[in-house]
View 1 (spheres, rainbow, N blue to C red):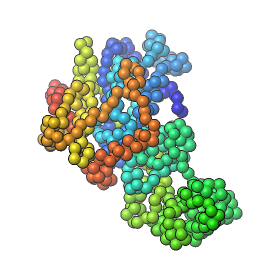
View 2 (tube, one colour):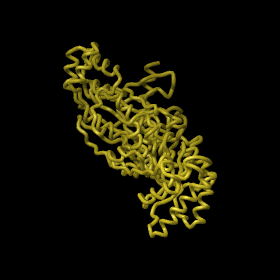
View 3 (cartoon, rainbow, N blue to C red):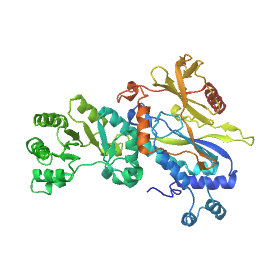
View 4 (cartoon, one colour):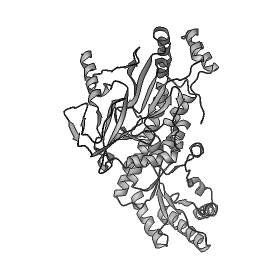
Length: 482
């Protein structure tokens, strides 16, 4: 799964439109497409960008193999000269993107493609497929980790993921969002992320009794001894047998470096508090109490509020599937077409729904930080080439409700352009960091959010504003269309 030709991972209409462009337009006509999303997932105040590494691999491998051409010919809808063109197809354009792990907001381009129209059209489906899924899971993971307030979150949803790719790349995205590791061994191999795990109820049931099963596991893995205590009776059997094993390990001089119990059923708040008292009374105050069982950010937050004595969490189904919000909703829209003089002519899509009206032109994104706190004040979408100075006042306004304005005084804010070049003239010019490095960067990014933006209920909205120049172009286009 580390090297795949995903060229035909596309909707048929991308190819039929390509043939239309081939027949009726200049194939080399350069255009700008933006991939962005309109609403934050899970009713939250932000999202986390993810998936760029796979997009890069997709573009690098983009070509129509002979068997691809043969298959397309068998559909009897494509002309031979068009198929001959596809046989020599290679991406030659530019791609800009917001790096993985970056906190992002609605309507700003996550990926921008500047390429001949046929090339830009073809890559739409795969880019959305990759970015939508991985950004969704990274965002969900960030929410779950925030609820845990510093406790370790382990991703272990592979068996509930929607297929191998979703399990592998979803686990990668979950680690980017903040998980300390995954149970997915192939993900660990491919992306060099920590793999973690304990044992199943079947391990306990396969032995004559619970104590014997615990003892055998402790003998095998003395430095990673987390025992599942709810197979029979958590308080009367599981925890006492675990304590007995820990006592025997200590008596034998085996260092108790990482040990404890896992709860997978029942009232996790009640059981964890009882377990903590029993472990402490037995002389094991540093024993880990981990928990699983259909957890998500809301349940973890509730358990925390109830004083649950859990310090490590295993989150599976609800994380790997983003169960409460199963789709990210990213879209890919034409924003500009280059004229014969090399100037970009802005294009706009209208809609009865205000939020579906697109932002025209060849754009980039600046992040505006409050200088004193380092927190995000707003994001500013502007045209490429526009410049702003930190030693001059900056006027921000909501493009949907432009009467809402904020003027930042000179010297009170800092600016950072968050889009970076990824491909230039078809050649990759960006090297993806290692996943654990992206995870560290993501934690820094999340810390630039205000707590009010990270809360789960009615989060504060971070405004994504338009520069005055871009806003004026948008209004002019809207006036022309009316």
